[in-house]
Amino acid sequence: MGQNGYVYFFTERRPEPLEPTLRAVCELIAAPALRVVWSRQVLEASVQTLPDGLSLVEAEEMTKLSKLIGENVSVEKAAQLASRYPLVAICPLELERAQPFTTLMPERIPPEIRGNVFLSGAEVHVGPEHLYQSCQMMDDRVSHYYGQSQFAVVVTAYSTPADWKSFERLLFEMPEFMAFKADLAAILGPVKHCIVWYC
Image (cartoon, rainbow, N blue to C red; front, side):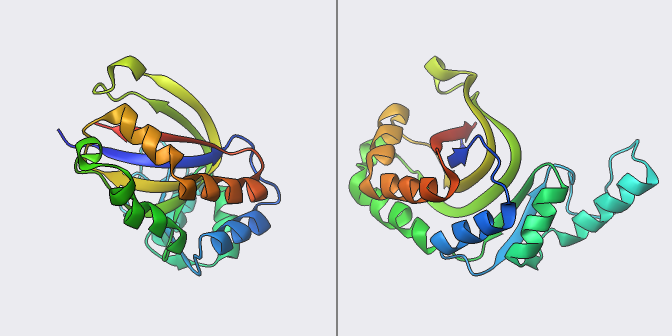
């Protein structure tokens, strides 16, 4: 069975004002440009696919947002979208600060623990998002609730750890991981972290 995982660095307080916070985070992760990835309001990246029951105004707003999916946007535009819609995910086009996770993880976490997992890519999620663990492979943490994120930097993970608990512990203990979390906390205030696995 394959899994996808998401390493969340998140705050439960929505940063205000949003634009300077988003700009500071983009500078931290060395992301000169952003791309709109998805929004809770758009189930499909197609203006022809709209949920039933929308008013004309809502459908028009959905169409506008649908057209932006996959488009590069400025930090200012991303902040405007995130202020207007409940949950928007944007993808940094470059993420130099993720390199310690992708390049050092194989050295720091033995293959008998890491399995086939690799980290690749990242997103910034702006808006309310409940984070919980419901993966049935993790028997002792089914439906564990981590909190409601209001702003998160999310590093994507692929495949399956051979040892779930040891993998998370060793990843979270990496000095680069803790340094990145501390740098984010200097911008966002208190930052939590977790991995959410989807089986």
